[in-house]
Image (cartoon, rainbow, N blue to C red):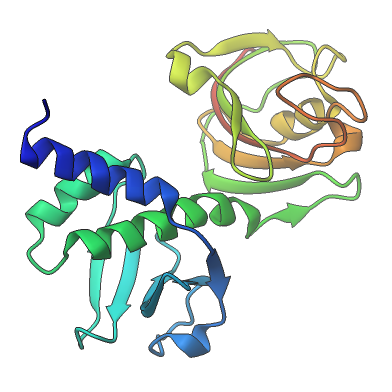
Length: 229
């Protein structure tokens, strides 16, 4: 039999997953911020609450009209239901209901933040530099070693060397990879961490790849570890 404390945590975690109707809203429903945040999150389940996200994806400007003054908090990118409940216990300003709302907001932002700030190339490939490296650029026909995480439009991860803890090595620019990788990776220096948004025609096209449906736009976070010279 579960203890009262354990059952409370389990029920709260379940509620975090079951909350419905989250949406990104116009900021006119939230307190005015300068500079204007990238996104504002509200939910019909918590009409008094608002979460606003700016350039730092792990910082949230959170307001609850029922409680008065807004607060700014930090939520680690790796947060799950358990971590968010721990945050509630550690921060006296936040109750479990607050953290449930913030959990939904952060999950939505984790998807949406990958869709802004890209530069589009004539081919349709889009890129965003997260950290600029200082090493040499990969050379066509030579091996490159990278860590990567691939996800779909809805944020679902279909492959990740980061999660496996083992980078991948392959020749670049010789047709062994999808076109988006062959075009995008050689543009950046060793040590660079970047995002590629790859349209279907530069990815797997109309093919059904199992975990990747036909005609999918692909999002890859890539860290260039070594570029053979």
